[in-house]
Length: 127
Image 1 (cartoon, rainbow, N blue to C red):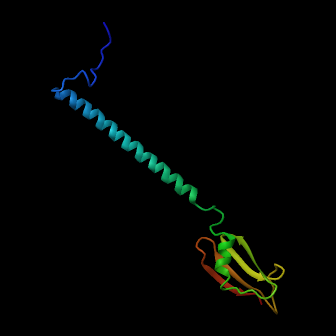
Image 2: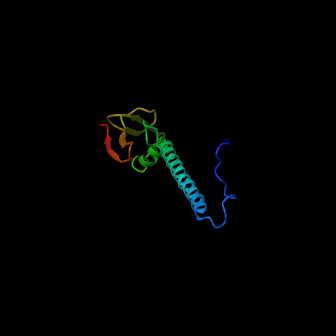
Image 3: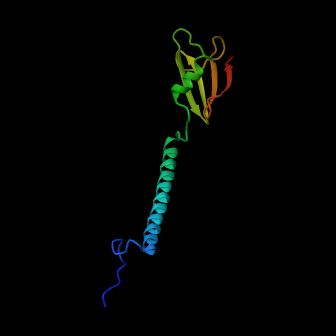
């Protein structure tokens, strides 16, 4: 006995409502499955996009961003350059002609900037 084959859409008569319902329900099921697959792919893409755009876990601000925050508060004198150091979630920024933080006469002004949001936590003069 030959294997049983389902009649294709051409084998179903034009007046057969059972065949039309079967074809319509298969199309609907396929459409719903495609929607689910598209939704899952969009979720994966969004998750990947968000994950790739996060900053490095060690720092949020770049050196250039830190200097942009510090320059209006920390003017340079002749021969000085800006220096910055990152440690424990904060940036320390100062101006100096040789990179050292000076104390006493001509003391260095030192800014402390929080890395997570760029907020200036303190401005001290090393006396």
